[in-house]
Image 1 (cartoon, rainbow over the protein chains, first blue to last red):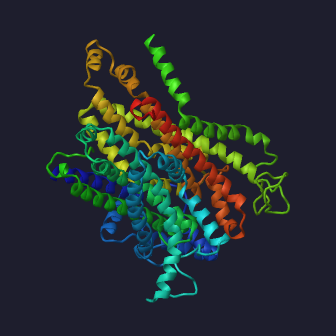
Image 2: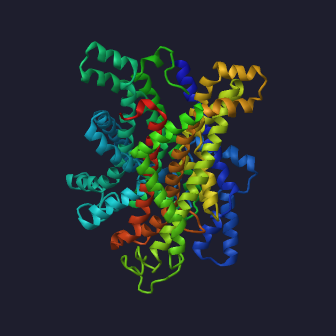
Image 3: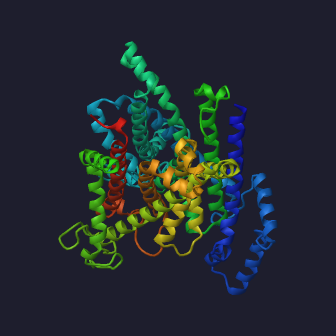
Length: 330
Length: 286
């Protein structure tokens, strides 16, 4: 178990290091000048612009040698300083991001967990049941093939525009200020529902299909046939198959995290939901170095943490990893 | 003799398998539209063809027009082409890299394997889209080919992982030992002795890579990091949302591109299952 976690942590550590290096490197070696951009919006006269340009170049420490910038970057990072957003000047990037993160978590955590649980249950239920298999499978494949934003657009169009029952933009009504009351909570939930539903549905299809295939595979395994030969009830055999099929689905969840997060980003853009996705879009459109880099780092850290949680869950579920028999590969 | 018999058996099951038939038909229909469509379109994708602005589908404009009077059909067929290009190049490159790294790691073993495996695990954990975002965000001019290459460069790990595992189990078999004893070159052993045993898997992996590359491209395009030169299905959806097609109810603008992606990728998945059943007798429905 120690070996198992040691190896995982090494991979995460290296990943983090690589990610931070990419994060630092790419903006600096790509074209585009954020300070010139920022100043051009201020519409100053040429002399004032030049003075301010030197001032900001110095203020953002872009005039230091490259290696020094890299060291400083790490140093600042470890102190929780991701720089100052040029788009929302002068708010620190960390502050901007921390304001957005709760919205992301509120969308992602329920969507991931519920779709995983429901999808697995449903997939296991549908496997080897002829009529369900024939209706669920095509539906599942269509769902899992749907681009997140398109499902979001469709849901927004159907429920927001045609039926007009749910709001399609923002996290709460603009007429409201956040305050603790049932009215406000209801309003937030109403705005939350459609983005959540589009994230949930796409993943649900994938998990249901994955589980259905795994169960069929497990039902072909020797132990299932043996149980069958002993005359065990169908339900019992299914329960065993389900437990065995859950393990690959759990490592599958770790692999899917990146895709889901990407899905959440575009879903937020569709619904103008104030999470990291919307910030990222604003950062890209305004060439805000620090904000885009911060979003990238937050996504990486979030995915790494989630991976770690899944590793722990894996150990809890699979006794082989606890006894050093490293059940999982890699 | 043996070979032809086996081939015809696959063909027999392939033709009988309705999942394969349906999936393949859908993909081929879209491919045909992508190939023929642009010559049927009366306008170029960005030309302001209709002076009246947005109009629903009609005999003149088959898929209607955008707010600016651009021909949605023209955009759609050109975007479809881009989708297939991204799938082929991105998916192809992803599969190729995965195979190369998987074979090298699995066959060489030892330190090479340790290093490559670590690399695979790292790239596997990093959210691909985040890396693509940060790379493309800083490119001033982006083409569809560039986009496909970046997608291919980041999508190989799970292929590499699976190929490595299979190579690992195959390389200690007798026939590989025999080939090694007879002095065959390592690369020849890999390609003539080991690879043929996983041809079916390679085919399946490349299909999934194709679908994955298409979806990745749609995500990138939608977030505003799509091709700056040319049109794509994701870009159409991006434009539709940005110009309020949702609020104005211009469904003909945003429904076709997403529907096409969904159907193509879904059909690919179904084809994949069909092929799996053809190759793997255990999964065949009796």
